[in-house]
Every structure is written in C-alpha cells, then in structure tokens.
Image (tube, rainbow, N blue to C red; front, side):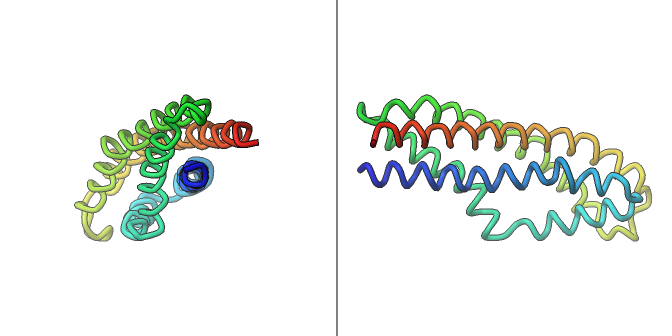
Length: 166
C-alpha cells in the first residue's frame, strides 16, 4: 500500500504540473503573443489550437491530474499517511476550480470560435475576438494560478509523505 500511495501521489504531481505548465505558458507567452496579432490571426490560431489540444496527451494530463489526486487522497486516508492528506485535499479543491473554470468559461468560449466557422467567412472578426479574448485570457490566468497552486500543494504532500516513510 505504501508504494501505491506514493506512486499515485507522484503521478498526481506530474500530471498536475504538466497541466499547470500548459495553462501558465498560455498565460505568459501564447496569449500575449496572439494579443499582438490581428483579429484573423488570433481567431484562426485559437481555432486550430482548440482542435489540436483534444488528444491523448492532454487527456492523460488534464484528466489524470484529477484521477490521480483523488486516488492519492483515498490511499492517504490511513493513519500512518494522513499527514499528507490536508495538502492533497487542498490541491484537489484548487484543481476543481481549474475544472470548473474550464467547463464554465474556457470551453464555451472555445465553442463560440468553433461555431463561427472558417475565419475567412466570419463577417465581424473584431466582434468575435472581443467576445472571446479578454474573458478567455482572464479565465486562463485563474486556471494557471489554481493549477500551479495545486501542483505546489501536491509537491509538498509528496515531501510530507517522504518524511513519514523515512
């Protein structure tokens, strides 16, 4: 049981860290870069990114962060491992914020871009960009901060689990 609890926590740290890195990269590089482009470039780039991000690697990281954090929480319920549980629980709460913001804000805005169709056929690109960009960027910053916080908490839980084992 000790190996499984540590392994699940380690994989939770890794998948959450990869997800946090993705959202952070969008917050500090991708969206500021796209923000300096014209309406057509931003809309087209985000349409293509939204199409391509739905892949197995993203699913493993984004979904795995939740699943492995839940598994780690369950496996740390025993009295001998409980010291890591508050950190895992706090990370889980932050990651639920990530999931909620994604479901309520980012995905619906991604769908707005998808429904707009081919960028060269959009009649009012500035309006489409305005409807999308500011809200999506702000929500992504929330996801970046929350997932980075969850990553840090899980990393600390791993330190606590190591202290208990040693």
